[in-house]
Length: 354
Ligand code: ATP
Image (tube, rainbow, N blue to C red):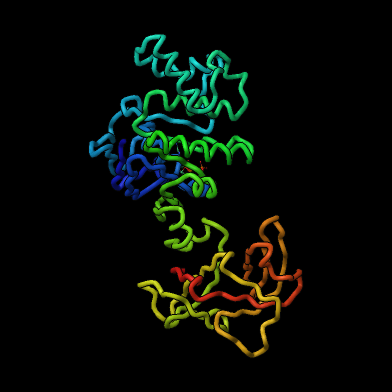
């Protein structure tokens, strides 16, 4: 098992900044996802790790040794791109054995290894078929098998599942994750799909604005987002502009008590209040006039989305859109136009720097 450290890594193309100030530890045997919106620098960072690009700043250490100047073919990494880049004129077996042949392995050993890998990606018995005869999902598996053929020190994947339909994609996410855990190969996966990252990752590196915004386990990123960008990007967020008070925040004319005010935020400062949809409750009665209970806000239902097991109630609260999500059996019986009260439990209220 191998680990990778990035120290102050950055890359610019002329005056265009692609990614900057990246300090990261990719732990041995773990699966790390680079997650972020389009253009934030995920692919550039992966290409720097692969050696396909040279960093403008900083260095990369594999097991403590500086590999910053090492060409891609001397790093011993396996890669799968979105395009897969399979050789269509070759058989499945020859695709997988390609790197082994270059390494000078004998024909029998190549064949054995290809069959072993096909077994591993649950595609046995297709070694003699042409790649062009396979379905999208099967081609995906061949690309994964090919990247794993050389026992890579790092397994690098750039949006490898994005061409698959939703159902197959979800199934492949789980399969790929189980395979990665079985092999305990240090893996980096680039994706802009937060659900994919949450499904597969030990650690998520949330990227935005060409830099790392937060690194953490999926549940930590969801529960304790470091800033408004992460809160907004991960999960469905209810974000309200507030002003910081002592142990509370002020939203319009209402006071909302919160569990904690983060260090560095002082009274009177603007901030953002985050409440996740599953923690926000809609009470099917209008807010009693003038009662103004803390953590209770008057709102109007704008939309009800019934998605089977769960129900989403969308409300307008003083001009701000909020979403409450609950199990069907707990859902408030409300309809668009209803005047309701939203309840923001104190422990569910997180305050972030605006
Ligand atoms: P996507 O999800 O759309 O692939 P990304 O997060 O992977 O996006 P990158 O492809 O790494 O983003 O690009 C980051 C920034 O660097 C973008 O603004 C992009 O235009 C710029 N960039 C990337 N490669 C080059 C290049 N070869 N020359 C100039 N600019 C580049």
